[in-house]
Image (cartoon, rainbow, N blue to C red):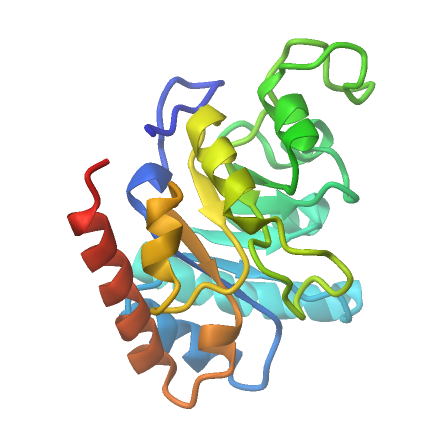
Length: 237
């Protein structure tokens, strides 16, 4: 589905044509790791680190932003719109328990990316504005959230989200059918799972462990990106 920015009428980051999104924690080789992943086919990068203080997170975010800017790849910071704006990140990703998408948009501005995690139909209803009286106080009834993409999942349980059960592919199919924005599937994205995820509607993929745990990140990214491109090329949709 084409990604249209509800504020400008454009998809200024081309998210609809991007397909492999790395979500990485901090690590000692962060700069080279991100560079290798991009060289292998990653075309969106998020830094998701819950354990650093603000000053350290800013320093590490600057590192990733520099690598991504040099490669023309958007950099998204998890959870902290204030720090995303401070470091000049290209966007921010918020979850259901984080600051709202409305509040995040107010901080990062109209031209930044705002992504939102969803895990169930009710959360999707709120995001796209199909709600009655269950909307957050800062999200008027019937108004779509001011976001550029959604994530859907995790399709299978993952250590990245401890305690959260897998959604299965049913919710992925629903989200990709109903969302006016690109939907990025999360949970268990590997070369051998891509085919069934594409069959369920996925066109955009978030990866963590396949790359974070790889001995050869560039090679692992290349293998995964090849599987994604092949599955999409063979998909009737």
